[in-house]
Length: 255
Image (cartoon, rainbow, N blue to C red; front, side, top):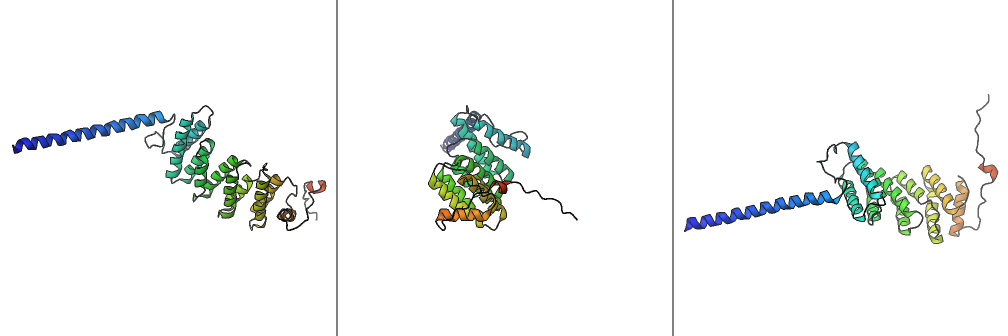
C-alpha cells in the first residue's frame, strides 16, 4: 500500500515537472516569435553579430531613428523602435551611445518623445544634455510655451556653460505670441549680465532674432532695450547705422 502511494506521488511530481517545463518552453518560443514580429530591426541584444563593436551599435541606433522617422512607418512600429532606443539610453553606461540614442529618438514623431527628452536633461553628461536641448528646441520651434519654460530653466539651472548657450540659441526664434516673446526676451536679457562672455554673446544673437532689433554686439544697447521692456527706462536705443555695420579691417602696424 505504501509502495503504491509512493509511486502515485512520484508520478504526480513528474507530471507537474513535465507541465512546468512545457509551459516554460512554450513561453520562450512565444517570446522569440513576438520579438521577431515586433520590429523590422533587431532589438538590443548581445546575440546580434558585431554588436559589441561601438561602430556597429551606433549604426544600429541610427538605423532605428531613420526607420522611425519615415512617413510610411506605422505608429505601432515607431512606438517599438522608440522603446528600444529608450532602453538603449537607460541601460548604456557609454555617454556616446546615450547621445546617439537621444539623437535617434529625436527623429521619431512619437507621442511620449517630449517627456523622455525632458527626462534626459537629468543626464550627468553635458553632451547628452546638449542633444536633448537641441531636440527640444526643434520641437519648440517658437510655438510651445511649455517647452520654452523647459529651455529657460536650463539657462538658469544647468551647471554647464555649453548647455546654457545651446538653450539660449534654441530659444532664438520669434513667436506669434507677444506675451511669450516678452517672457523669453526678459529671461534671455538676464543672461546679458552673465560672467561667461560666450553666454552674453549668444544672448545678444538670440535677442536679435526674437526682437528684430539690430544692435550688433553692443551689449550696452541691448541692456537698455531690455530695461525699456521691463519699464525701467523710457529710452529706446538707436539701431546700428550703415557705417557701424561695415566690417572692421585691422591693418598691420607700420614701423
